[in-house]
Length: 144
Image (cartoon, rainbow, N blue to C red; front, top):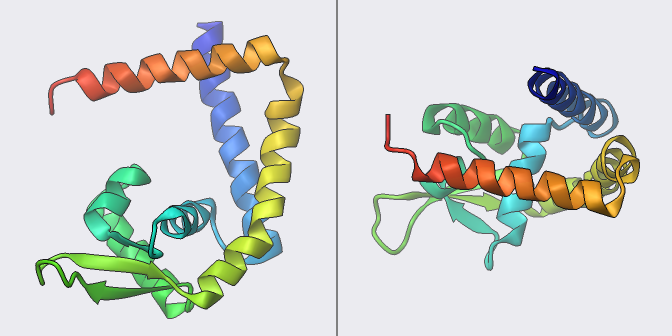
């Protein structure tokens, strides 16, 4: 019970603090940041909306709403997928890249100070092993 409650409370508080820092200092949410990171890491700065939803663990409708808001802010653009004409791509804009570059040090500093720097190498390896196992178990479960 201690492990479970510690995980729930600690992870929620960590995400809230990281989100609050990004919002107050850069005007973007942690969810926005995750989208910008995923787009920036793609070869051409674009990702199919369906892949983006899977990658950030979001429902497609929630992602559509969020990308629409980010598009209004000039951080991303959407276009039709040239390959099949049916899919929709999200693309990071130059402003989105600029915002990501501004926000990344804040995010990295927060992750380091609130998690990484608190743990020794053995603890970090254990955390990685635990969540690799959790991810593998969730990937292997039958669809609901």
